[in-house]
Every structure is written in C-alpha cells, then in structure tokens.
Length: 140
Image 1 (cartoon, rainbow, N blue to C red):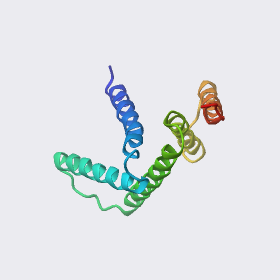
Image 2: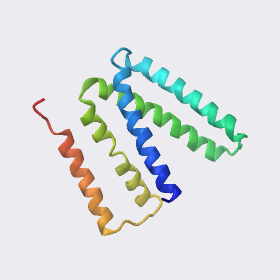
Image 3: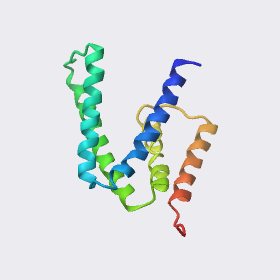
C-alpha cells in the first residue's frame, strides 16, 4: 500500500474520532470550555511533534501569515462546529460539515487553476446534493 494512502486512512480515522469526541465533551462542558481544552490538547500534541522533529523556526513572513490565518480559521471553524453539535444531531452536523472540501476544490479551481475531470465534477455535484439531503428536515 503506498505511503500516501496509509496517511489518508490514518487521517480518516483520526478526524473521524476528532469529529465524534466533542459531542461527548459538550455533554458536561460548555462550548468555550470545550474549545479551550481541545486547543490545550492540540498544543500538547504540537509540542510533542516539534520536540521529536528537531524543530527550528523558519522566519518567512508570507508563510507565517498564511499559517497563522489557517490556525485562526481552524479555531473559529471548530467553535462553529461545537455550537452546531450542541444544537443538532451529531450524525447530520458531521456529514454536512465534512463537505468542507467543496470549498477547497472550488478555491483550487478558481485560484490555483487546477482542472477537474467530468467525473470529478459529477462528484462535486453529488456532494452538493448530499448537503441538501443531509440538511433536510427529518422527523426525529
């Protein structure tokens, strides 16, 4: 199995747990406390990775600015995710928010000029249909 696929599978498993566990945390914590402790966990994990990787800061302001903006967007997105999971069914919230790659694909096509095949465009259309189907009102 190629290394990239192993990493994809590990990402799938880790992010699947990442999306599930906040629902357990928000049973006893408010969303801002959950956000705080989740970020403390992220900081601990980051420090462990940096310590084992022999990390040295690369002082390049353009990359630093993009990386910091990425972190800020991730935290604000996480806060919105936590608000959603406390207000609606986890199974629906996770499915709808898991379609965030549609934004990434759109930006990749518009800004990076990446090309999609007809089959990939069909996948985008089906993902958009999934948003409509998963967010439709249900009886339970």
